[in-house]
Image (cartoon, rainbow, N blue to C red; front, top):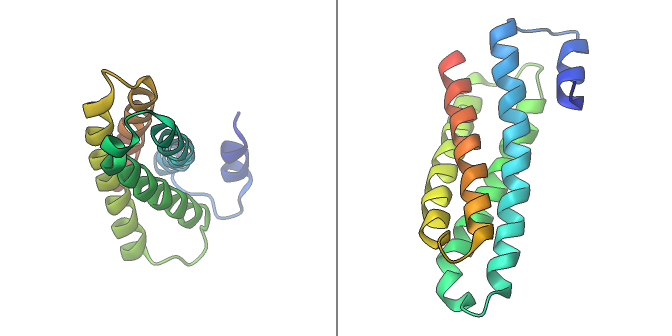
Length: 134
């Protein structure tokens, strides 16, 4: 059982089990994606062709920031504004889609971009599943 799952199951404001599972998955995917994107940006900057990866670095950093923010907001469960949460999760899904596409362009020559693209796809999916459940 992950720490996120432990916290959600012990929270006094329990949600519907289906929504809670999607919330847990999204929180965890956002954290993993933020880390992957930050690491990918750093790896891109270390490549010999770093100048050609500038768009990828920017996408990585934007995605990492949105994932981190989304993760933090999703962890706050009391008296949140549902419209804001939906908008943020939707923006996170879009950032993940865009970053994933950009990283996929570089994946044939940069394995770290492949790893990042996969993390982006998982996070995008988790965001869209949470949106459908909200």
